[in-house]
Length: 349
Image 1 (cartoon, rainbow, N blue to C red):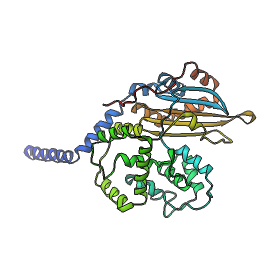
Image 2: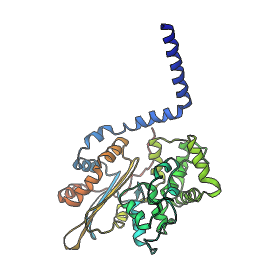
Image 3: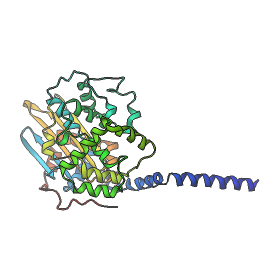
Image 4: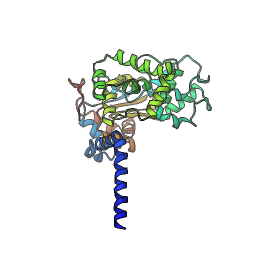
């Protein structure tokens, strides 16, 4: 009996080792991501309310930009004043929608699945703006304003007729430029190449790849779907953070504040990508005035990043700054940083 148990145990161990060997890269990625999620864990534990997030902002003026304005009056601009990487294009897409000369009631010609990465396609099967669930541009704008998935933002940019140009580049293109079936170079080499590219080069590359995917040029999309279905090349959270920092569009908090439309009630907007946070809001005030808050964060430790995503405390701080003059006063009690750090070299781990 003992001999049989020993044999069975040995066979089980061999099976487990075989599975691990065949999926070594996936296991290695899981370990890397688990370690990455501990980055800044102590800081994350201290963030238990919006006041604590304000303390974090005050402690990192070289990584944040927070702007509070009332109409044309700047109440405070804390931290960076140069352009910072944006976690997403939602505000640009909504601004493009509002300024578009195209009718917003006309049915959108494309589907959201044309802008979804292969691993996300299944989640859109019963979603709006698909072949079975057509929608108008106004419907897409509503989904974007409610914070629906990134693919809707790219769809709205296309439907509004401003698909290319500056921050109107679809984020799908940046994501595919990092990792697709045509690339063979190690991720570190890709990152180094991106860091040497001009903004125009980065945007052109992202646009061209997005076009190839959404239009399935020469079967690009079909091959990409098949490659990813077979495992593709997964990239770690730290690599995603660094690639986003190197390639995503950039803007100042002041430029972003001009994209926020006036509203009859308080409106909040937020987007996040590993290492990057964008949170903003508008509040109507007496005598027709409007207070606007924009907060940009970069190089956010991953434990802090996921803590903010879970608790929504970044939005909580925006609400405080919209309503609480004492919070604004606390933010303005220290001098701001005029520009970014001299070196933008990324940390390597």
